[in-house]
Image (cartoon, rainbow, N blue to C red; front, side):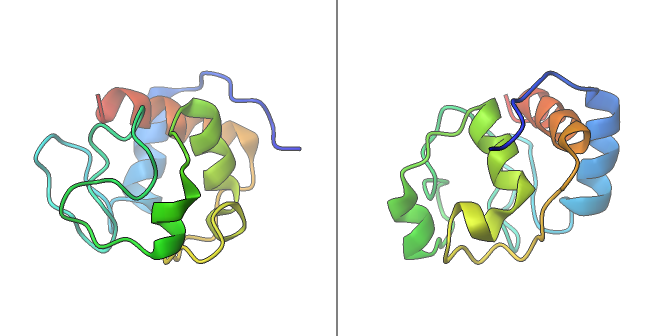
Length: 110
């Protein structure tokens, strides 16, 4: 069972985002889709729904409504959470890292 999400350090999450996510994702409103979709507004949106991004059928059909817990669970092992996703990221095994990253994403994508 995945670890429950707990609010972490946004500052540490920002560093994780820069080193692990920024090469494929943007967070600002109107930001570009890169290898991965722009993440602005991701919380409260269903998987596979970012405008202008070409998702796999697996992502579109997963029907995940992104909240902090789902995002944390996904980031532990994306390919296990949504089999068939094209996200190449292996995941963050430490719950503390996921908490920090999700805390940052919640602020940066709102």
